[in-house]
Amino acid sequence: MSSDSLNLFSFRGKIKVLHLTWVAFFITFFAWFNHAPLLMAIAKSLSLTPDQVKTLLILNVALTIPARIVIGMLTDKYGPRLTYSLLLAIGSVPCFIFALADNFVQAAIGRFLLGFIGAGFVVGIRMVSEWFPARQLGTAEGIYGGWGNFGSAAAAMSLPTIALFFGGDDGWRYAIGLTGAIALVYSVVYYFSVTDTPKGSTYFKPKKIGAMEVTSPGDFILLLVMKVPMYAALALLTWKLSSGVALISNLTANLIYAGLVLLYLLDAYKTYSINREVLSNPPAPVHRYKFKQVAVLNLLYFATFGSELAVVSMLPLFFSETFTLDPVKAGLLASAYAFMNLMSRPAGGLISDRWGRKPTLLILTAGLALGYFTMSMIDAEWPLYLAVAAAMACSFFVQAGEGAVFAVVPLIKRRLTGQIAGMTGAYGNVGAVFYLTVLSMVSYQVFFLVICATALLGFAALLLLEEPEGQMAEVHPDGSVSMIDVA
Image 1 (cartoon, one colour):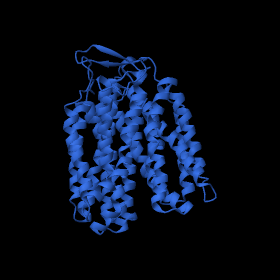
Image 2 (cartoon, rainbow, N blue to C red):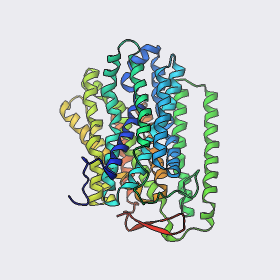
Image 3 (spheres, one colour):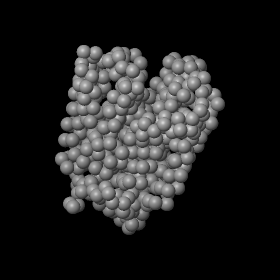
Image 4 (cartoon, rainbow, N blue to C red):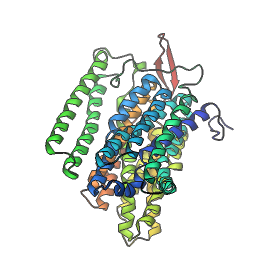
């Protein structure tokens, strides 16, 4: 077997860590989306209105955007082993809160807090990057992301059956409580089964925690600009809660808007404090990295993962209304889009390893733009099989693109990998908020065209990306420098 091959049937060394880590990610998504297949039973049990159900869906993603930033920082500082274990353990608590809820307010609190577990993806990106060399990193990260992301589909397929097994009006409570129990037990398993790095390797940590480090004044300005859409997405969610479902008053919404502005200013000041020395005395070229690499990847993940989250949410309804299908059949057909994750995301990473990061991203981004343009033309006159085939083809480019994005993320700056992954991952959620808001205002056809347009914007930005090559430098605690291959 070549040195570039991965023996996935092994359970030793780095392959063991890969398997244990994608299972951790799988469980976080299994728990995060545990409500989706049970919404009808939950709504009936708690006597929820349609607006309250929509509110739960919004709250489920609200906390994930800032959580991915925070978890990225904690991962870089304390290591993925401890961070993932604590995230799984703490994330089990909102599962129990939601399972025990007796009214909408309690359910809303549980759902909002559970958004934090959606940040688990970030932790594994750093863990996998510590164990695999650059020539295998895209494939390994693709397997981690693709197989772990399948947790949401597994929840959809298994939790209704589990709820029926327990039976009665409280079957959904047992099913959701079980996801919390699994997360809690696995937090212990993970902690005692992995290490942050292979034996003898150094885990490089950021010099300071609280904001991302940059290495030039221009990068500092770009970082502040790239923070704005994340706060804007939270403002958009606030607007939907006030104007869309009227959960909060206009006064409360205005206070939240003001709080977000203040929080951004504090964030900007903290970022300045962390990078003050860099602004006056930039580091030597060997220690620099280009933040534009991060900015481009953010935009690409906005278009890829953001569109995936949005399309997975609306595709069953799209098929049902367009082809006059019953909801069960429409849901089964739409699940093919998410099912592609098992192979598409690893394929994107594998192609990146073999044929280059930038060329792969260019091809996949062009493909997803074409894919969504094709989906915008689907109507009732299309044969159903052709519409499903178009959705699956589009999903390949979307999910392979996600794998290709995270084939680059760990190759930018090792000690900041968690924070870079956190920001890029957060942009995926920002994209989902944006696309779902657009969907609430326009037709399905225009919705797909908007995604196509943002993909083309990402393609243009991608021209600025530089292919990772050579080595990156990291400094040991004793001051010595280690050179890490990125090609």
